[in-house]
Amino acid sequence: MPGAIALAEQVIRAGHPEYFVTANLNYLMLAEEHPRLDEINQRSIAVLADGFPIVQRSRFSVQPLPTRVAGADLIVELSRLAADRGYRIFFLGAAPGVARAAADRLVEKFPALQVAGCLSPPFGTITAADHQALLEEIRQTQPDILLVAFGQPKGECWIFDNLYELGIPLSVQLGASFDFLAGTARRAPVLWQRIGCEWLYRALTNPRRLVPRYVSNALFLARQLLHDITTSVKNWKFSST
Image (cartoon, rainbow, N blue to C red; front, side, top):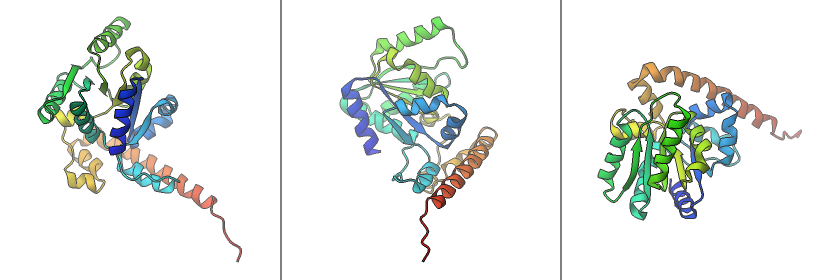
C-alpha cells in the first residue's frame, strides 16, 4: 500500500492523466473475455493486486507480490493523502446516493478532505449529449483524483475512453468500495481479510449475486494454477545423474 500511495502522489504532482487498475480474480477472468482490457492494463500507470488469490498465484512467477492492495483500503488511503495534501476528489458511480454517502463518511474520518463532487449516473446507456454533459460537470470541478464505481469492466473502459478529455491526474475504478463506506454492503471483518477469506464472507452475505461469480472465478483460478504449474515443470532442468 505505501508504494501505491507514493506513486499516486507522484502522478498527481506530475499532473498528466493516469489511472490505476485494481485487479481482482474476477477482473483477470474478464480480461480473457474482453481482449481490450489488455490494452487498458498496459496503458495504466499500475495494476494493483486486489485479491488474495492473485497474490498466491504470483508465487509461481519470477516476481511474487508481497501483499494485496484492496480497493476498500486504497480509497481510504487516497483520501488520507488528499486530506493531507489538499487534493480534491470526485466520486462517480454506484447507486443513487451511495457516492455522496461514501464521501461523507470519508470527510468524517478526514475533515480536511475536499470533495470536488459526487455523481451517480443512471445505469445503462446514456445519450451522447448526456455523456458530454457528465464530462463537463466533472471537468468544471477540477479534481485531482477521480474515484469510479461503475463495476467491471465498465469502469476501467470508461476511464480509458475519457482519460484525456477529462484530464484528471489520477483515476481509479474501485468496485464495491463506495458501498462498503456507505454501509449499503458489509465488508468482511479484519480476521476474514487477513486469512484471505473475504470472498467467502461476501458470498455468505450476498449468495444469490456472488456465489455464481465466485464459482466461475474458482474454476478460472484452477485452470490458471494448472497452467502455471505445468509451465514451471516444463521449464525444469532435470539432471541425468
